[in-house]
Length: 112
Length: 116
Image (cartoon, rainbow over the protein chains, first blue to last red):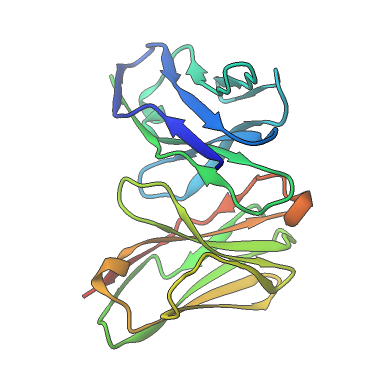
């Protein structure tokens, strides 16, 4: 079946450190891929997306590239801030379904 | 207006109570969703409404009853819940559904439900 696997958290970093959160997927076909972010006490927000192989999604300094050969969509940011502390969810979706499949989430904690 | 508004933010109810969660969006979106999220877990899809019709029910117990009175409103009626139903209930909307669904969902902040 279709699924998303994320690295276990929490990820703990100092401010201005480099961030990578790994995400791999299993899918029959070519899904769209997403990163959603959930700040404390809030609902989820779309952070970035990519719809086909080699697409790069980017937003707020975060980037992720759709890698078909490695079935991955790793999230990166060059310099994290305390305000980036949140839970990050990788997700996939196919164009003929309303089911967004989420990974288990990775908690990021950034300290000053 | 790019908001999905959920009320109440917090709800405490007994196992014999009847209560409702409400969700509203004014973005003209044609699909609306209920998700359930337990602590430190990803959201789990419960229901999807497409053009005000129930299109997906993920085998949710009948003590949860969704309702879509119009294209902007989505309710979740709760009756005879169990303590294990305590969770954050998230409403979401998307511009389109089915094969036109891009996967971009707009979420509300959620209603935190505690069942005693």
